[in-house]
Length: 152
Image (cartoon, rainbow, N blue to C red; front, side, top):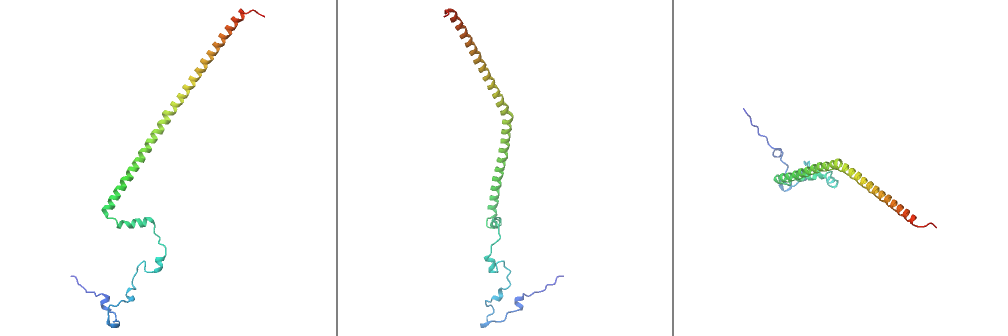
């Protein structure tokens, strides 16, 4: 069986003495001595507050309604995901492009350089042959003219 016991509040048991003009509820500073507030001292207001930007922003979450917070969170997560995916795939694409250039482009450039060198060598050989033939023709023509002229 449950027994109920009535407890009376301390304020009703210990009634304050009457003040001047027989007023029970007068404004007295003694009534407010039991405050444990963080800002009860004036010196606390003058000092600097050790609060970071993150603390201030996290305190603002109570101002924003939950539906709006959920929407902001969803949009920011979508933007983060899209950016992350874009960076990942662009990095992979650059890797494929760079390795393709290294594996295909450099050997092609070397082969092209060698072919240019062969073409230049052939051109020099043909010029040398043309020059040799020209000298032979001039020498032959000078010999024929020398026979036709009388000696002095």
